[in-house]
Image (cartoon, rainbow, N blue to C red):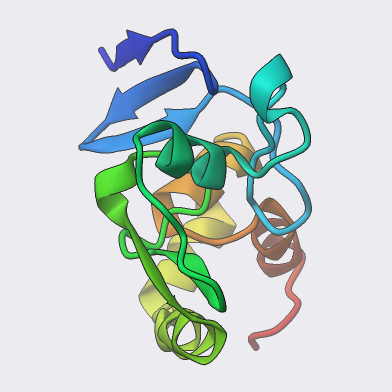
Length: 132
């Protein structure tokens, strides 16, 4: 059973060390905080700042765990945009993972969280897009 936490930034469930935000995700798999002090801010950024950490100018937060709706500050790292993009591009799904996703009957949001991809990507894979 996952550990649950109520937090000033967002509520989350701890699953295998990830703090999975209990919020809806956007089309890219990220969550926005709905708490007054952080409203409209991406939940992972809000959690980072709430933890007393800074995001240096010109940097963005990379999910080193590759799980986009994880808000655990220990799974984030400030990096330049190019590094963030290149790290994400290296996180490719294997043919075996794609086959497993296509057969998985769970909600797309759960599958996406497990593989660190967007829900819409799971949807597209399950409909035969992107890979033969």
